[in-house]
Amino acid sequence: MPTIESKTVTAKNKAGGKGEIQITHLLPPHFFPTENCQMFASVVIPAGASIGVHKHNGNTETYHILQGKALYTDNEKTYEVGVGETTFCADGESHGIENIGDEDLKFIALIIKS
Image (tube, rainbow, N blue to C red; front, side, top):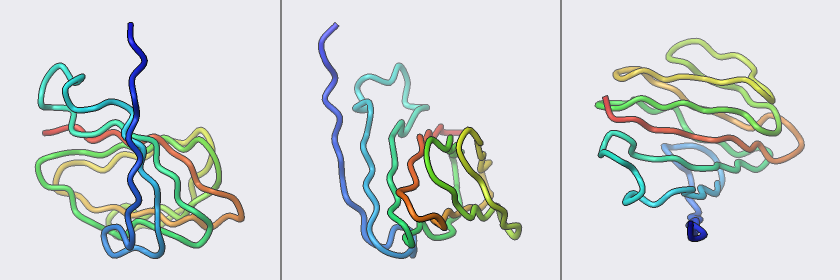
């Protein structure tokens, strides 16, 4: 099997969040067996940066935390998450995440079409 090249993009103030984040798309879209998988990526959020609270329409999003600690907003509730924890945002729901640690927050993000 050939090596798969990942593509990293920088996003500033993602969904109204703070600072810049890096999103590394681990698989290009043509690798997905159907259009149901919209994104499979590694995300890095530096200390003090965030992805703003945003609503998912027509898809769901899962984060699996690999490094760091964060303040995760799930609709109206906010709580801390850390290494080994997984969050899920259902279709029609809202979420956001902010790095509240001193090191980079790293997680895997998976967006699936509903």
